[in-house]
Amino acid sequence: MTGNLIYIYVHTVWTTKHREPCLHKSFRYKLFEHIRNHAHNKNIQLEIINGVEDHLHCLFKMKSTQTVAEIIKVLKGESSKWVNESGFVNNHFQWQDGYGVFSVSPQNVGKVKRYIFNQENHHKVKNIDDEFFEMINLLAE
Image 1 (cartoon, rainbow, N blue to C red):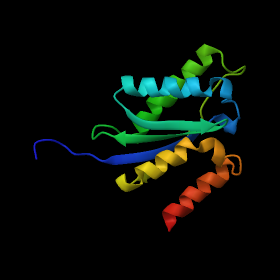
Image 2 (image 1 turned 135 degrees about the vertical axis):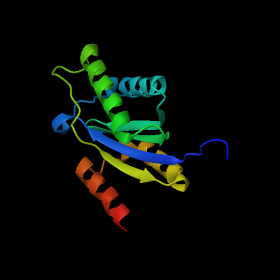
Image 3 (image 1 turned 135 degrees about the horizontal axis):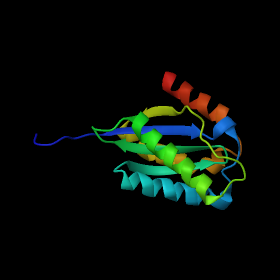
Image 4 (image 1 turned 90 degrees about the vertical axis):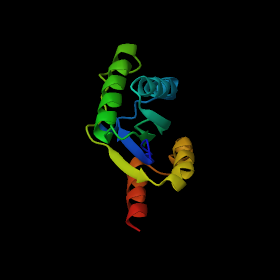
């Protein structure tokens, strides 16, 4: 084999500071588009991004030279700066320090993409805590 073949997908979740519901629809999709463009510029393969008022989900296809920590640091740092400079929120905007990361097998990529795409529907009946524990329980099975 002359090259590398890498199929490592990760589903990440991170929240606003104190889970403040400040990602209003009025700018949320502009934020997601900004993160998508910044990821592209940094050679990060972001498959899908979506979320609700207090958190977002991303699906990344990793490269062999990248780490999850580096990717999230780059995207969280730059996007919080952009939100503050754009004036979309009244107070100083921050992301929570931590994040969740879940490995995704290639055969489940489509299912995870649909799950991320349908975030608003999921959160009509579940909050972030319920969602997070559900993901953990699915992995434990």
